[in-house]
Length: 156
Image (cartoon, rainbow, N blue to C red; front, side):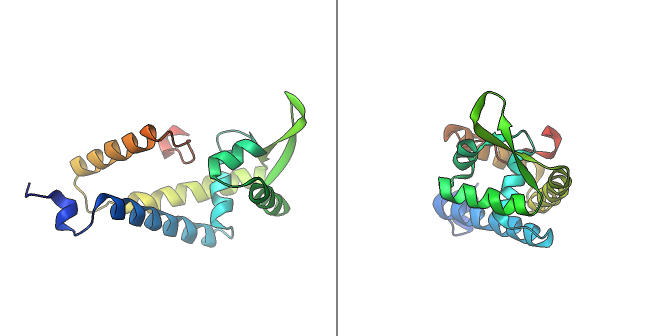
């Protein structure tokens, strides 16, 4: 490959590439959420809760939100009938947030559609390039201990 690699040929470095990629994925996520009648943060919440119910503190950590922000997000999502608070079986002072049946249906639909849209982003890459991109992004995510927020379709 020519000196500097593909990123240099495209005129973009690692930092700009990662930041712009994050904006690109966020834009896809936001568009999909709007089309499903929810906010981007509500979509993220639904996707996180697909795996299991979580406590408020855990949700705040996973989603990177302050306590007041996660409380407001859960309140709004609960008013829409998508999540419910349940008593924690292990700690009577705590609640866990779980999907309602309507929330689970919407989460499945939203998740599948958002995955399809994100999957199209690297469509111009060769299979080997996609595999390399996945491996490199996987290393970055694991090295930085990013919590599992969005699983692959085949992992559900």
